[in-house]
Length: 321
Image (cartoon, rainbow, N blue to C red; front, side):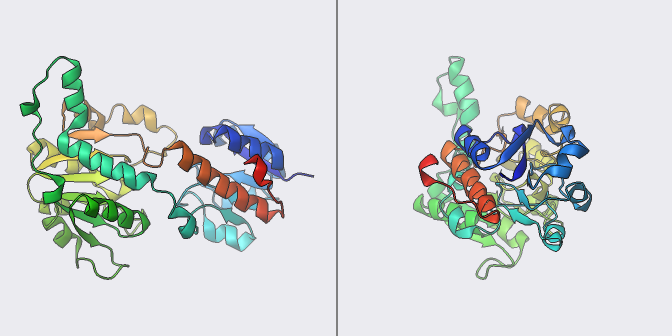
């Protein structure tokens, strides 16, 4: 008898991975957790957990047969891992998969792309060209990347990958990470010497708005800010103020605060950040696409499916992957 699993369509797994789930699990599909009902939750052994919906003790109480919680994410802020451990429920995610994650380079690549796009104001230049304005003198970037210093807030897996690519482009690298020796001593020190500040820290209570107004004001005039980590790390209002005043040359954000809230789209479209991006050429927004390559999606989804199968002693036929 196959383990009963609850999958939400908002996760949008790749078709071949969804086929894997249907092959190895008795799969129940709902659009999102708002469609949960007690009868379904009472019978499931596997829960696929989307970001933005907290799997806490109360949620687990409703799933008495639960044996595994699955999330193809590198962070699990939406899962109470300690409560799961206490109940003997296995969390099948990527937070403990450092060797595997070394093969996933998409977010680091997107970070470099955003640095280039923000420096050269590529979206605005493209829009101008599409309107027939073919004048390169309107789009001079402050300097070549090989003459800029890159400051990394966080020097874990992604910070190191970004540093390696940036070094190949001639950039000098500094970082601030209290858990990694060899970096600068304070975040303010990092800001003062960075032409580009790129965020790669883990988001938690300790790091909430770690890049605040004081840090942003310490950046040299004409600096660039990049965030492909989590929106909660950045004081957005201060960033917008400094973009508007001209202190910052540009910013590019792949993540914004509150993006996993169920009603986010309704509030985001009316936000100051969207209004600013529409009316200025020095802010680029991308909808959290750092990890969005088909091969990365496929690999990370398959990884957590394999981990989940192991919980139940299921061997996956590699020929069907």
